[in-house]
Length: 244
Ligand code: GLN
Image (cartoon, rainbow, N blue to C red; front, top):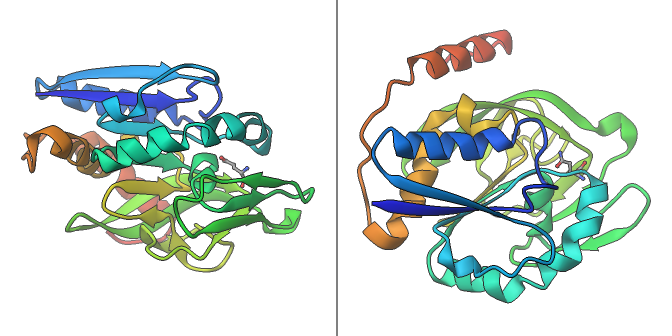
């Protein structure tokens, strides 16, 4: 089996260890003998987005979002083609925001989003910035689990029809709304850096299954030894006062 991953705007969208997500996806493929290619792209590059099984875009501050959003909007057709061809998407924080209707930053600048989904994001006042460790109870592709991560965003994302998880500790989409991220059959979008996948290998495998689904249908992945990761996650949950 082989798998093609594209890390979009890898030089700009990479906060709080988001890069670790790509490394983990690759490593978990390698350990299972799945041939995994990771390509990167940035502004101005010509790329056929629908050639990829999994498209990843990490977090970035308002500054980067402002720099690249027009380039991203120009790729709307390519992104739609990738979605139509069954590609999986994994988006973190600033990228999550850009796939919705718009992001209104603290200075009142409106960054137009791709408009692929109904959610929109408005920056909070400084005293309601969402910062710190986060724990959630999630449901994805038939699995129910707790996940841990780290968040740091001013943006408050509203009108999320299908969130990824319920917040157990921390903030998520809004300061006190109780829900985290967005999930549909092809897209996982989240505020959880940390990075998410090294801390929660189950989510990495669910994303790999989604990505492999495009060419191979439903696949079973050979189990890997995640005892160290599981131990680390348990400790983080304990620190946040949550029992697994
Ligand atoms: N500009 C965004 C916010 O602060 C994104 C930040 C991020 O990606 N961590 O809401």
